[in-house]
Amino acid sequence: MVVKQVVGIDVAQNELVVCLGRMSDQWLPELFAGKSFANNPSGLQALVTWVDKLMNKDVPVRFVMEATGVYHEKLAHYLYNQSRNVSIVLPNKISNYVRTLNVKTVTDKTASQAIAQFGLERSLDNWQKPKAVYANLRNLTRERDQVVSERTVLKNQLHAEKAQAVPYNNSIERIQKRINLLNTQEEEIRKEIEALIKEDPEVKQIVNNLCTIPGIGILTAAIVLAETNGFELIRNKRQLTSYAGLDVREKQSGTSVRGKSSISKKGNRNLRKAMYLPGLTATRHIDAYSDTYARIVSRHGIKRKAGVAIQRKLLELIYTIFKNKTVYDPEIMRKSVMEQAATA
Image 1 (cartoon, rainbow, N blue to C red):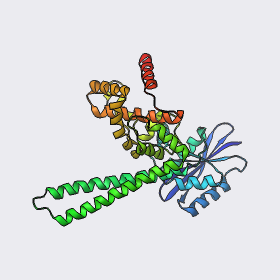
Image 2 (image 1 turned 90 degrees about the vertical axis):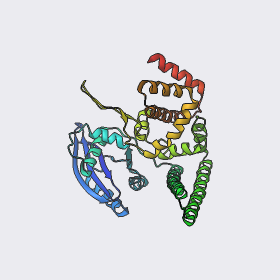
Image 3 (image 1 turned 60 degrees about the vertical axis):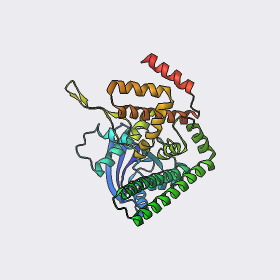
Image 4 (image 1 turned 45 degrees about the vertical axis):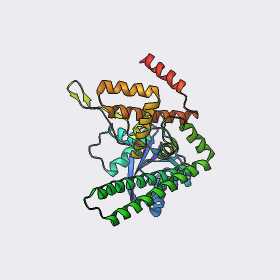
């Protein structure tokens, strides 16, 4: 008798690769069908029709997919609006699971099979459609990042033009006009971000709490909330650092193989980038982080490694403040560090 049914979906920009799985009352997983669909409205409808045709109507069906950039969002919203059971899993959780399987070649098909098997073996939460404010903040913060990057390129170009032996004034004038335009756009985006936050009392309170942390301003708080959808899929600090790509990967085997430790960088680039400058500020203004930074530099002599450690701790602190609905308290931070040192 079938007790559980899962639809594993590997999502790409234009294609959905699907695998159907079921679990018997003897707890034996079975993958029994697969098919591909276009990632467009007609493809989504065809997918649901196909699933309903093959699945047991007396047993609930869960649709499981990875959080793949923005490409999974149309499918997730479509299924949610049809009152289907949807679960969205962080990519690193699936990739870690795949490594436990005997999969020699990773393709879209094997990926969908792994997702289906993962869904059968795990107890997953139902995905809830995120608040619109987080999606809008993500669009705005990413747009601002692009504007700032373009402006940096133009400023470097302007410097090079002015440094020439015979500068061409018309070119310099046009570059300066583009820089001025980007300055105006960046200011407009900042105001829109602040206005969005003020319009939502809950988000406004969250941002106010996060901004009590030294080094965290409105923009950084907005990026963190936007890139995590309000920490929607995050259940603990370890998941968060892994999602940001700030988790440490070690290459070690026995006593003969000892590679250098490094962060994985297999995560959300925007979230990781947003923590860089706040990490520098926090190092100067939070005593516990200053001590940690100094200790790591003295031990390894690598400032970058110490900086990444502070960024990771700062991101974890943001999550703690968010989860506890509180504000930063330096005295609580000091006691926490002392307790950790006593048990170390």
